[in-house]
Image (cartoon, rainbow, N blue to C red):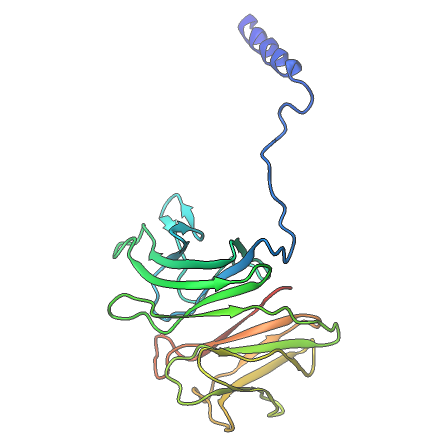
Length: 261
């Protein structure tokens, strides 16, 4: 009993000897304000069909991924984002940089293999998405990518803004985004690896069904395909069209996300 009492007294003495604030975290942090021109802002989107789980590197330093105690290094496969929350970006030094992607070290095949490399050039204060595209090749490469500048639109709380990025592989023509119920073409003539401007769409706040046709026709890459989306007024959305023409493993499809809000 006396031994326990002595230990308690020692602990009390240790804490009472500390001045107020001695145990407060003192690590300095830099607060980055939105659009600070000291940085460019980058996010990574893997839209490469057949891609293994990868992590991205900026000038040889890994900038994505995490570690799982059971499975080891985790990464990003097909249809994954980093950061994975809308409106978040990684601050980087503006100018010329090199982006690589390597298969995660925990992979049972080709661990740490570099499968992607591209130079990028960014401007301070601007936002970008790096989208890997194409298909994972037989020589174990992600051969294509698009660096998309994220231009922040002026929002209207009574409207919804949308834009379309065409990353569909092997399509025979440009694509339109069409409201199914009315047949109204909302976005037209978007070529492969290109992005449309933002446009305001009708019936804000309601669940709508959209189809994607070859430009100027009522023919779609998959005749039965449509996407139902309940979008919120006062926000801007990017729709990504993806997949490989004729593929059952990676068929035509879409994802959508917010860019800033």
